[in-house]
Image 1 (cartoon, rainbow, N blue to C red):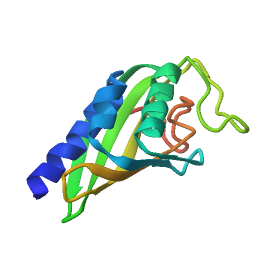
Image 2 (spheres, rainbow, N blue to C red):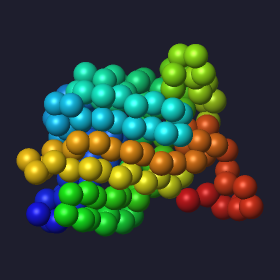
Image 3 (cartoon, rainbow, N blue to C red):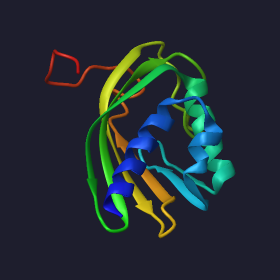
Image 4 (cartoon, rainbow, N blue to C red):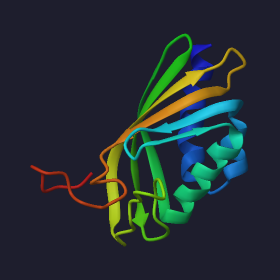
Length: 147
């Protein structure tokens, strides 16, 4: 089962970078959740997960993801990945407190924790990143080089 969890984590990253929202939601359970604690969003059910994915691609152009590490457990997987793109589209986050586009390219490391059902689909994903870097495009403090 852990090999399948590994493959699912890699597939999640590939589909996050792809504009195909139908393919992205296909790997979730019907009542699956997309949790983004950084901007304060919890999307419940496939329709809301699809909306989250569509909004990401409406906000960010040229999204590319490189998987750096995957760790799996009996009912979960975690992936660390490098995400690059340009925040040049629509605002992200809740309407009452959106993150506005900067027009800047960004590059930063992210992590996602996937809770996986016995059927091999995602019950929930919780994504972590540095909002100043992704999607806002600011360099990391204390470092001059970029990833």
